[in-house]
Image (cartoon, rainbow, N blue to C red):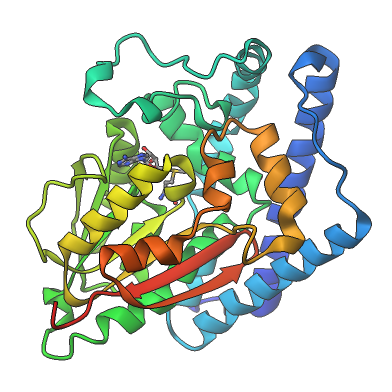
Length: 355
Ligand SMILES: C[S@@+](CC[C@H](N)C(=O)[O-])C[C@H]1O[C@@H](n2cnc3c(N)ncnc32)[C@H](O)[C@@H]1O
């Protein structure tokens, strides 16, 4: 059967469609909140026309890079179109049905509404919260089922494009192990959630041995459903705390970590970086992707501020002022590089060979 060529126009159209869908969803849901639960509306700053233009330009840059890296062969073009569309379509009504309970929690400022069945002693205290006012926090199958869609809506359809920005520094990192066959290279994705980053890594580098770790068994179950149900190498998923992971020293040639740090208190941020350093073989690379910060993107300060006012993100303000480069240096990493892509900053850091 002839394959339909995946063109730049098709990609741009898909991105525009996702962006419009995200904006429409947020517009309607905010209107509904104003009508049914006005007390839940936070006091956010107005976004000026100038800022909107800068945001649009920044999305265009991200999408240009996303397309260009596919053209250059870092990942196949089909990766740009890959999402469980039918599943998302079927589950979309759940997001609307969940809204009234989210408003109630916002109104009551109840940020610790976690399922009663959870054994709280098994989790760090900072984890037992409703991040983004999410029902059940990260601790239920329902939360895991709608998470990917919520993130795509939040970022107007750019979440996967931002996650893909770890692939280029990851490729640079693993290419340093010239003496190893790619099938001998082990990569761990820390706080893997529903496994979107692992899916992208596997499509780009199909022969790597991949691992994912997360504290939520519900999110890991969701990751397992999408990753280990399809062709491709088995991805090994482990439940554990990223601050002290159940692997021995120098187990991995590279580690990735996407959208975790802004949800951690500062001590935990350092603990995770230190533990990644321990787990990386000398000569290996850590790639972190997380929110932009005040220092690298001062022009988006209003957006960062509004984000933490609108969603429950208790450590975000501390995170956007934190010095991640310093934390990486403190752990022992060198050759630290950072680059921002729309709302995401990507750091890569190297564990010296002679360590
Ligand atoms: C915002 S989500 C990001 C998930 C995924 N990386 C992505 O790109 O969508 C944060 C994830 O971090 C996990 N998490 C938070 N604290 C953790 C910790 N201390 N150890 C392991 N996972 C943690 C949560 O369960 C959740 O899956």
